[in-house]
Image (cartoon, rainbow, N blue to C red; front, top):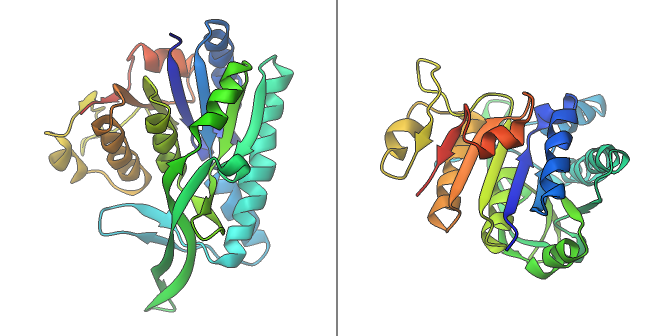
Length: 269
């Protein structure tokens, strides 16, 4: 049976040359691996929103998740950038180098149904306010759509928006969406590619292995987007993913090196 690999690429990779990632994807596809590539593109969203005069606000949950506050206007920018500009740029790069990439989002074919976080506590003008929010947490994945594309030898490239149970489009965290797809498809590996080697301790040394028994002490010294990745990775491992790997996507052969557990953080249950 072909190995199933879900790969998430972060926003910094979208600003850089994707050649290293695509080179590895070509090799893995030739080996008949079943691949899903997930992405968002936070930096591009922020840049375009600010050009439009829409300042971006970020919140932190009690569990340590960092998240963009998404009102209805920002949600529409999210759709345009993530499912449009970013998705098609990635697909174009893959197709022109010989990969059968198909760009979709969590909305297409009802791929990802999400539970909308309807309210978010944000700080505006120094005051806490409860505001309407258009982000969501994946609750159901249309595995049949992924498997249909795999059967025809395509590589799904999934933009991190979803449709809510109330039939609204919502933005989604790409780490959480890649986790949902990996768990639902019973993937063998989930790789979260970012702009650093992996999870670093307070002395900036690489932590090579994390499991549930070590998680609390490690999370005390991790913040921001990396904390989200670690929490998500631990969830994935607890739900059956054999290995979740956090690694740099900016080096040569980033996926192959991650699969070989070279200079990265491996997360298991």
